[in-house]
Picture (cartoon, one colour):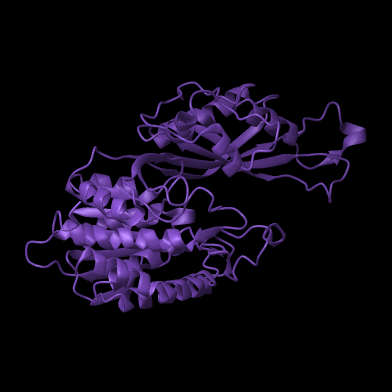
Length: 451
């Protein structure tokens, strides 16, 4: 195929791809505990059928211990051609409060060229981009193809890490495309070259056997909620920089977003200051960040006049690519113990860790991707970092140090992933699918694009 034929084939297949994304995103495949499992298995089955429809001679679900199945597809390499592994995930974040959504989260809705709904971007757009790119070749692929789509990345991606470590030959490849990131803005091509690692834990504070009347006991009885609040606020100074010893600020060698763009994307209210020091690229991509993501305390609507006997919080830490998540979480837990008031009882649990990623300068695969993205977007891509984590990536780096790992996708920074009103820009999805198809073509036959 010529590059022109590839571009035309992807464009011609987009109506089908969009319909498939609508059907896939309508499945509430939330793999968090407490959510129904049937939709997650339904999404796995739908993904398996999509891979089969893309022309892969092998497509199947593979059990993953303690998790939902991975969906795997494979096509052998032509003689002398390299092999590319394509990654995405079919599980999604919980929708949260339905009232915060302008459209129902699991009823994908098309508005002005953008498809709204949970998972339309993160990461079912990645699945559809892979399928649209592969379908272009009608089963005659220029490279060997392996596809793995996992089912519990959002909650416990480390389970796929263990599976891959036990089955390395299943995913061994010369280049690995991780379709679970995106561009700073629609139409602004970028390759993510660094990921922060992640750690999370639950901290529980106990002070009393039971709640007691705030009138009779308040003023002397230690309030667990007040103690926990003091501990959590001690994590940052007045500027918003982290106070935990051993977690220094890092630096990112590249440009990040402007403050104006960041404020608009993050929805920072007028007059509210940003937190932390250093450039935005430093803060978002190369430094530690600590966020309290959940609290178990009495609700305001059900509040009673009582001193609280216990309180819990979920704490999430983002770790620079070169940082060690386990050492980091140990430092944060030790700090919380040191700043805890009144000799309260503290317990930690539900620990999760995942390593970060820093790409090498680039080789043949990155060069091929640069040319493919330049043709698909009209300009070459730039390097960006990502503050989020993809647990599998660091495992793949350790298993296959010679493989190039390329991270890109259709999740632009306005896509509201993990938030209400998530959406994907469908023209961006077309460009990303086109770039992947052109990359496979170019990687199989270098300089085939003539750029």
